[in-house]
Image (cartoon, rainbow, N blue to C red; front, side, top):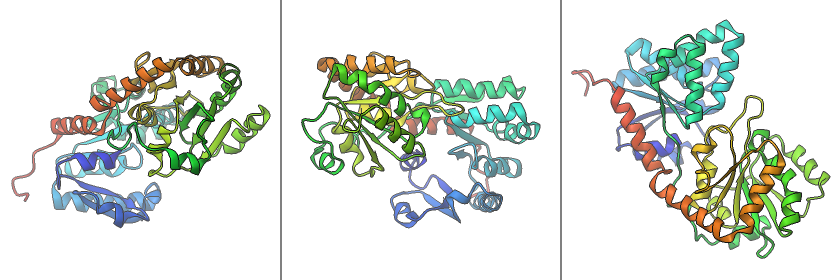
Length: 379
């Protein structure tokens, strides 16, 4: 997400501070912004040493470039160096919040006075919190209430996310991808989910719904792209239901193959639900599917209603039980015309709203409202 925004900010208008990755040199060449790597792996930025190094490096960048505003791609760990920049240099910062981290923060605030103080400092000192959905925004406002600062709720802005409509689009030849992943022509219709294999993604609920779906549409099959810790349990569930010939757990699918994979499917299913402290704050795969011309069956939970326009680009169902999920899938599989109309509407919605160009315009508008003017002595 932050990379997509950096590509759309005016050239050389940002200094991007982040950790090192194996492909840093190659990827950095694709940006027109200044990119400063901390010299420590991105996965290590959350450690005490990582935070200390990142804060020192961010301070050096602030002294050199005199930024007027700082964006944090997430609350932690990026919020810590941003908080220091505010305290030390008076640089306002904004935090992008995604949903799950706020559920965790809520739980920590309720049980720990220390967490209430540390986490409260990060969100209370932010000039703005940008939520990826109306649901996430409501959660952010409730966190301010728990901190005894309901007056700060006005700092929360909603910016639903998007995708790249020139990359995800209908009409991509899926022949090679079908062969590569065993999705034979004429063996569908294929349902598709692109998600990490976690319980809150609702993959298990879709598998549980599949016997009823296949009773109504016998040729229906289900493909899941993604990695995650729940694969063994999902494989056991598939075996228990005797669905070995109907479900494909594809594992990791490369970014290069993903647009064609959407084109190999007939219907997208994102039956996500809240599970413990995990929930879908928005669901970028839902708008990727819409961009590809697919109708969507999605769970009515978290921020999903901001990504799927119920009755227009897809349908929202109760995703806490397999029966409503099955009913929604059967409804759209049986009506080719309705499915195609929703896919076309989804494509239009991405072209006009759910795209990174619009998201970047929203972010630029927001930081312009909070950005402090540069000092007179600054170059």
